[in-house]
Image (cartoon, rainbow, N blue to C red; front, side, top):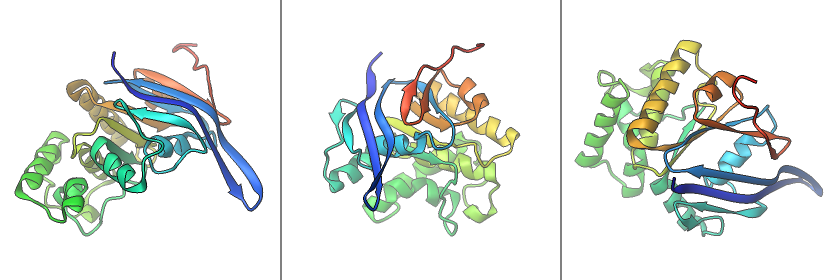
Length: 231
C-alpha cells in the first residue's frame, strides 16, 4: 500500500508567558493511501492539535510531515495555504458553513474562493456532489434551512470539492444525534471505499472508531498501543 501520510517525531509546546505546556510529545503517524483511520483519545489528549498540525493549520515545535510524497512542515505560509486548499479536505464538528450561502455555494467555496468567482464548472461539480451525499433536493437551500445532519453532509461534499488526497475529520459526529451520526459515518465509509479517499477521523466515540479500518490512540500527547477489537 502506498504511504500517503508519514508524520514523525511531532512535538507541540504552547507557552503561556514563560510557562511551557507540552501537548504532543514525539508522535508518529503513518497512513496508507485509501485507509479509513480513527484517531482516538480522551479530551485533552492532543487529538485536535495533531489534526491541526497534519492539516497545516499549526506548525509543530519539532518533527517532520510528508503528505503524498511532499515534505510540508517547512513550507512558507503561501505554499501551505495552496497545499491545504488543493490537497486536503476538512470536516469539523461545527460544520462551519456560511449561513447566507446556499448548499451549492458552500460546497463550491474551496474552489471558488481562490478563483474569486463561482464558475459553471464549479457549480456543476458542487451539485453533483450534493446529489451524491443525498441532498439533491436541497441544493438551493441556504445553510440556515438545513438540519444538523444535512449540514454535515454538505460539509463532507465541500471537503471533496477539490478532490483532496487526505480528508481530516475532527469529531464529525460529535454534535449529531445517533441516527444522523450513523448516516454521516456511512457516507464517509462509502466515499472511502468508492473513491479510495484517505480519512483520518478524530473522535472519542468508540462506536465511530469501530466503523474505521484501524485506530491510533493518543494519551497525554503520545501514541499508545490500541487494544485489539473485542478486548
